[in-house]
Image (cartoon, rainbow, N blue to C red; front, side, top):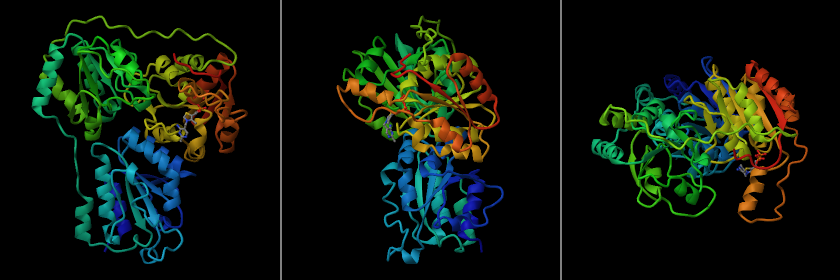
Length: 534
Ligand SMILES: Cc1ncc(C[n+]2csc(CCOP(=O)(O)OP(=O)(O)O)c2C)c(N)n1
């Protein structure tokens, strides 16, 4: 009879989940015994890096991804990254080992005594199967559930003596051979109403968010904007983990400000605001004001019932974003509306050169050498808008940003994104402070020949926190300076090929080389302190 291990790996094989991210301990070794040769195990040296890499991999491959963590302390280390994965809507199936069943009640060493409760608020389902033979079914259930909307991580704790237990072959075959599809279409009446509202509006606008890209609705969103001649905002940057619309498109008018008052003001003059694939809205910081301009109506399309119900204003349609866009296009007249003048997106003038360079000037240089099929993974808080304004990413799957705001996503996710997209160059733009939270991902990039380019912005401070201090009227806060933090030196210790740039010319050349290089490469550039807004 097949064992729990045979059956579980056969399930993972059938699902195409043959790349596993983990950091093992004694409680996980039984799972890894005789590791099948058609699987790949990506070792991360700390759990934040493990989950961050898996997050990038799952998002960029569009597939649920298995993570294997060490019992309680491993899950504990991973919590911030699991928080990010739920904010990013990433389909991770997170497993962790536990003591043998017979020693859990006396709480032998390494017992995770409340395994289910530990990651509970951050995952869609948290479970420890009551019997060993239920493990394959539990992992199948966790996988289907992770991939159903709202997509997000699930957790299964597996006692270490479960793996050699035999399972009933017929029941196991049922458990592992199921397909579960959940891309729901909208009520046709809701589609008709949305189409009618769009056709009747005098000055409608779209706000596109991350689930346009994740659902595969990229081309349909362009078609909708072009057919009705609608201007398009990106949903606010803090929650915009992916782009929902090409940023060089003539209808793209910019990134919506993230705070209530400024966002409401920006949308002034629009009688209809249609939000696609975003929460309404990922607000931060707290700058109060009217939620919506007087007399305007908002309709959001989201696959996430929670996002739909918690929005502070407007109506919502809960359905798959791409399918809803297709249905909406079929409902609308195929005639193109005459083009209307949209407020043009302000063109960022080249930033003046200074010594050290301003982060915006660094982005001008990156834009010069950035390949058309390149992907940016971004975690450089004070330079976020400089990246968005100066590198006009215009292909689907070109941008990944930690929507949860927990640092550590950027460096680690970049490695996972590059593993999932080996033919597209990945550039991770990261602040020297942010790089510290999952710094061990450097080692995995080298160990598994992942040719990511890391561009480290070294401003010797937590610039974004100094900016927040000014808007929160906080004076005299300690701990906001980072003198002598040598990320390149640390990366070199992990085996990364590193270079230091000082001026725009050597930066351009070093970036060109790093992007073309077949190995993990890092370019560190000193940048001027402060925020780079444009
Ligand atoms: C896990 C975690 N801890 C702390 C923070 C708070 N935090 C937000 S931005 C930031 C500073 C980032 O510094 P750096 O990467 O150097 O970027 P800069 O602000 O200088 O652009 C910190 C500490 C966070 N977001 N996540």
